[in-house]
Length: 577
Image (cartoon, rainbow, N blue to C red; front, side, top):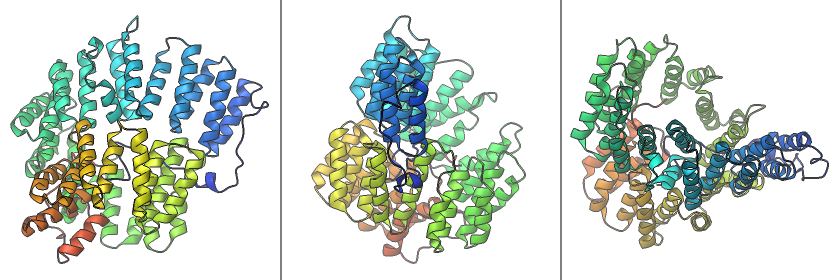
């Protein structure tokens, strides 16, 4: 499975400000006037940064940091290059920062982030272990915080790849191993998460957190008894923050009815009741029980903590039943909330389908003063909108323009390949992914994307399977990669062997693409009623998925999702929005 968003549930999209590529901004070269003083250099770089030209801004900051002995300037140079995805420049800036501030932890960790951004795992490991082993050694809490920050900013997968197998004693402290267990969960290696959590120990809240991690890992592996025992242990202390560990485990085990019962028991709890009611509403929605979901979300409108989520889902439900005006009003009401971005994406979808293409694109434009990440998000949101509505060629053009300002940005290069494939330019997409794979051979996401693209187009199937299995060695429980394996087995006429792999992928992540594949393989081996059941479950969880709808239309056009009837599924751990 290849996705526009590579890291399921945790990755951010990257994109660019529309105005930055309109040809109205001349690039600012690094000149003597800009380097008269640190302040002049920073001003010139910041102007380019605000105009969306990360390439110029990153180079200007790096040149200034090398000319002046200003630690803050070097730190800013590294930070800007990291934000812009210009990791080789970030590596140089971080090296300069370390020269100016020997031993500064922030400088070392910036360099590690730059290495991880390039998937230079061996170099990142050497630098991180050097930081761990220095004298005086960083405190356990600082090590745990550093690992957590690297996981959040560089990604759980490369962070885990860097730390996997390390025997450094500084990684053996309880707090550090709890962090490692969480990173391993996010990095799709449940067995490794179990190993870390088994060693973490702890008392009180720490013990509850460790038990919850252990429960989720066991559940992901399908070890029901062990998962439930750990979850009960985590939830036993009502003062602990792991009140919902048992519910998460039940959902991962596909025991939705039991999860609903547990949530119903928590509805009136003074501390957990609001969250329980929100989860009950989301569960009803993702099971396809839209009547009950609407009732539950309307009840949440009076709760300040749940109000935004309630408005969002009520707007989604309005759009599903064709009440576009109500949906747009609801999404508009979310401006300025934590759901502003996703609401605007939904609004743009509705406007685009209504023929208001340019209004939809403008709606996704970044606000004035938006930072690099927000501008990046905005551009790829536009590109995804275009590609989803038959304008993948236009999305490709925009990405190619973006790459002029953010050359070699890994996420942009990846998205370029995705949109090439969706535009029907398969040969160019494969070539682009092949080039990325050669440059980043340890990046399991790229390896899987290349393997899946080959498999989906029935190209080089033995190589495709080899690539996918190689990716799974690093992320053995990644549902996108499990889906890829099931799909290549199906393409190689091994449908029966593919079924348990696809079933597990769907259990871990109730995604429409995975459900479409699972149902198609079931259908191909003659299990047509089971295929219908799989598609029903997928439609309930991901009703807007175009791939899923196309497959269902092709094989079972009479299949409908019953409105108001209980469905059977939920995506992930049931904590969406």
